[in-house]
Amino acid sequence: MKRKGMVKCYKEEEGFGHILLDGEDENLVFVHFSHILPNKGRFPNDFRYLKKGQTVIFDLVENPGLGDQAKVAHNVQIISD
Image (cartoon, rainbow, N blue to C red; front, top):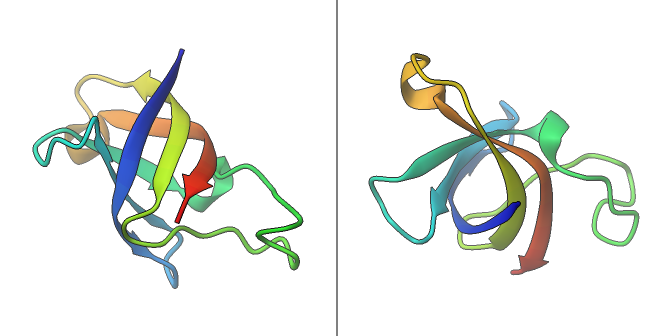
């Protein structure tokens, strides 16, 4: 099932960040650049990244016991800037 969220922060130089799940500040989802889906229109050089405030949809993968990476976003698609 696809989930919706907003990018809280993204460190482009390091290739990871966090998404606010359902707009809740305490409900963070880890995102790695390798899980952002390619899009030639948005990423012509295939360098994938996110920007703070973007709305995204993604598959939520839960890994209990991994601390701040217990929830991970896979198959991330940007739906608005």
